[in-house]
Amino acid sequence: MADHYEVLGVSREATPDEIKKAYRRLARELHPDVNPGADASERFKLVTHAYDVLSDPKQRQQYDLGGQGGFGGGSADFGGFGDIFETFFGGGGNSGRRGPRSRRERGQDALLRVEVDLDEIVFGTHREIEVDTAILCETCQGSCCQPGTHPVTCDICHGTGSIQRAVRSLLGNVMTSSPCGTCRGYGTVIASPCVTCQGQGRVRARRTVPVDIPAGVDTGVRLQMPGSGEAGPAGGPNGDLYLEMKVRHHDVFSRDGDDLLCTLEVPMTDAILGTTATVHALDGDVEVELKPGVQSAEIITVRDRGVTKLRGNGRGDLKIGVQVVTPMKLSGKERELIAQFAKSHKAPKPALTHFQQGLFAKLRDRFLG
Image 1 (spheres, rainbow, N blue to C red):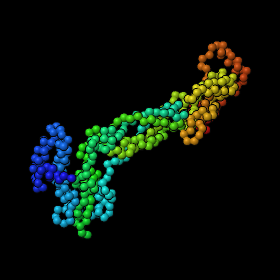
Image 2 (tube, one colour; image 1 turned 30 degrees about the vertical axis):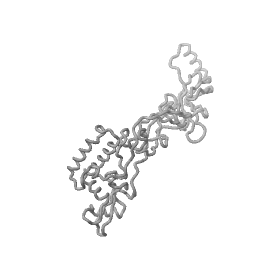
Image 3 (cartoon, rainbow, N blue to C red; image 1 turned 90 degrees about the vertical axis):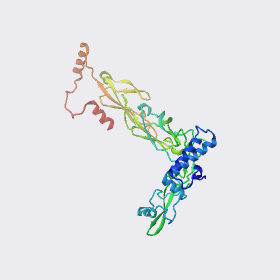
Image 4 (cartoon, rainbow, N blue to C red; image 1 turned 135 degrees about the vertical axis):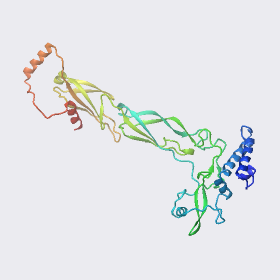
């Protein structure tokens, strides 16, 4: 690899001002806007990288030492007792890791809330869900570099991802290591980052995810979709996508586990004489037989017309609570007929019973009891 001093055309004893002047002169000569040639472009990158290293006193010192400190000689950076403890007890920036760390990382998981209707979960449904997330950069395909370029080995750590230095202790001179400040521990430097993703290997975008929502899900249930979360940096694997379900309120039907509950209003005459009623269930019509004398709060159970069970086979039941509706307005003739019926029927007089919160309390007790 070319020597940074030679790239800038200065001596190793050059002052910061001499290094800056040399860089400005070469930058004006090799800048792509002035010199569009391919060779000039590559030299411009080398000159810029050399200046970045030599203009920073700490990086320049590390570069002059070849990326490592020496024992004795007065040029080593001696630390305190904290460095000694890090060396012997596993501390320090490397945290026990050897070698450079990878730029590729797993993407984050994502959580999305999805609302579904009650009738959609009877048998399950299919959705196309739009997700705003990170996806793989199409320009660099996760390499983080401009097409045609690639990461170069770090001049400071020589690809190791860490810098070693000597620490003087009571036990003698020992070596400690810390992540390289130039490459941030990666061991390589991206000289030409991808302009589309700014060297991240991924971009934000909206994408469509097909989802098969199973039958029987309820509010609060989470579905896991492995690999459908955010794309990882530098082409790393995707995280997972979690879908949290919320079942919308239905005006007619409610749910108790896998059972569907509803109320059927029955005219008083039909309750007395009996009839057949049609209930428009979530998955088609259901014929219900009302026997003569049916009472309010009675429950009619229709087997296997509830929600498909999320775990296991079969379906729940459809439970229909009866509410007998008493007419509020009668004609003179109707009132006369009702009076005649009352005289002939000899119904028991009104009697006190235990207090209940109306019909819905009775239905609730019977539904859930």
